[in-house]
Length: 343
Image 1 (cartoon, rainbow, N blue to C red):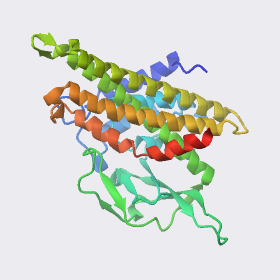
Image 2 (spheres, rainbow, N blue to C red; image 1 turned 30 degrees about the vertical axis):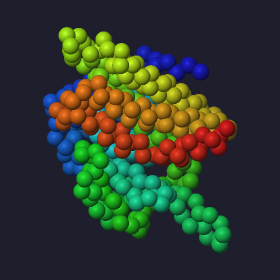
Image 3 (cartoon, one colour; image 1 turned 60 degrees about the vertical axis):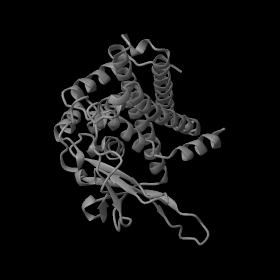
């Protein structure tokens, strides 16, 4: 297996980074980030990324997409994580693979998983043009478990309450009062599983971007901050912190890109025999990436010392986003169970 980036993949990642560099990021020191638009989505950034085609990376060219695969998608989302771009990027990209009409990015799509027992929280609800909902349909035969399906519903018809103080202040949250009463069926149980699996992969790639950029910021600060007449990066304790950050980020990146290649290889096949292994690889990548993003955010704050705790440095944005994403597209226990079942 060779999951080293190709020149085309690096060029795609570079193009995304160039677009993101034209817009202020929430975690930039001394800046509050872009002015949030409706639902916490920066309209100008969304339009520029849509013109680049990031939502149609895996949509066939005949349907208006780029006709690429999972390995290219993770490169795109790693760059989004590095810039801490906020918006329903993952859900819209997933929706485009199911409904190519969303590939152009003219519509913002959310995704809600109602199969769990916890109250459902939706991000950026006020900015959404459509919402895909994964729900359980009760079995018609007594004693027979239901099955999942994917619905497309109109967000305006949902009954939801705004969460007053979300963990990530840049990402508005709403709590659903009840399940959608009606919607268009656009996918079955297999579709639902694929959406959650691919969403976990893209979220893991975003977390890798967070872990990587925080490593770079911690190292840069350790080189220029002096104490006792020396750069703090010369102290062994700080060296160990930065080395651990680098190791976590690179291990997570390798796991994410390996999982992307396995998913891509599985998609090429017809019998789906390798799907359990690919799904387990995605779960492993998600666990490693979540840990890397959260741990590196904490370590970066520690390297920055007292300044790391200030709003001015913006490191808290990364920590809060990493926390929130660690609960998205499957919690740690669920991914651990999936891995154990595949052994």
